[in-house]
Length: 262
Image 1: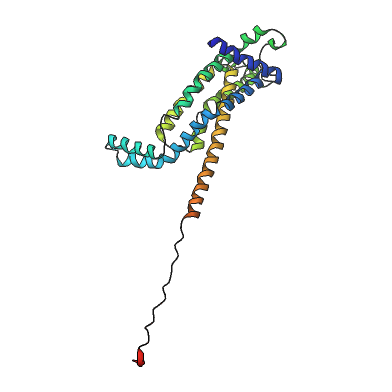
Image 2 (image 1 turned 30 degrees about the vertical axis):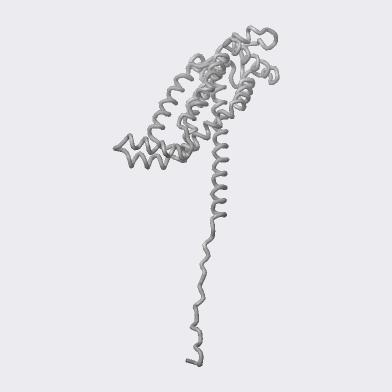
């Protein structure tokens, strides 16, 4: 079953290669298609991140107020989540659902040369290139690196993919303006691990991941902008329908004239 799934993914990549004439471009195209398919899932993750960002000031206030009472702190935070209709686990579910597809794409791209060699015909020409930018998508930075002038020149596009691979972990934090130290520390550690992993990963895998990350960042930035605009419109509507207080000046009541001039 899993092998059939992998073969189906490679079949799509092969068709995109026939359309575009380049294996690297075919990887970029399938990444775009994949991001479009899973957008309803990732939109939930973006919504969760946006809500969490808006609740941060209130959460920090509770953490400071009940720093000596963790049970009360947790109770008050759950009340905030309930009022905002926020599920802390909702941001994790989309990532879990995406993992099988991510793993499948990774396995297909890692075995790309063998799969290309097995199809025959004109598509079986190796190595698989990304135009003249990356001469071999099956090679990694660790394999290409050499201290010779030719080796350093050939190494540049590979190391750029690795660098973007690591930086992709930090870009969402810049968009959300995250200042939490623990989040920054954990993300920094993850970025270093990604650099280590990317050093020995085939360029085709990095091309897929970098393209997916950039598309995800663009989608998140657009989603955030749309949500901020909607929130601003709701605030304007609340201001418009708010009743206006009118100060009424009561007329001074004059004394009635008495009969007979008295």
